[in-house]
Length: 177
Image 1 (cartoon, rainbow, N blue to C red):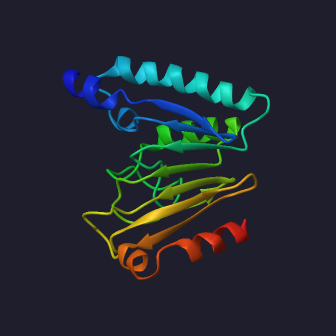
Image 2: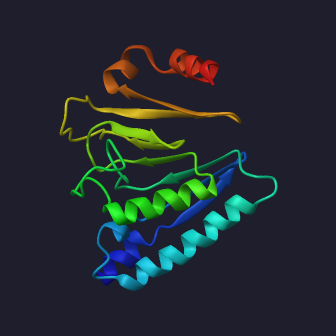
């Protein structure tokens, strides 16, 4: 575990581009950190500092986005704890902290299906895989358009992309903002 963590999982990341504040978390630490509690604590300290920084920044970020592998939930914040989501106690804690800081959306994968929802203005976006599918979704990618006023997203199958590209769809998404 030690070597794996320091080579691959230490990738906490924050970036600010065009007024959008982006955080990348190691959600595995929220699912089970029994083998590395100090890394979870370090991430918690780092996350709290970043959320505070984002929510108190002047000017305020237009959007705060979180990226993590395991979703908070796949359909509802009240769903049962499973392999596909974070434990409910952790989920509720993160949701409250994210809402308080003004997070707009959380993007994740892990489920190998498209899912998610919006709860109290916090968008949970779960994107299917480009590789192995576990549901009825076809192989594809999610296009995310960010403007000063909105974050909009849509899943495109590889077949759709191959037939017509995304130029027209992106234009429509941006017009809808």
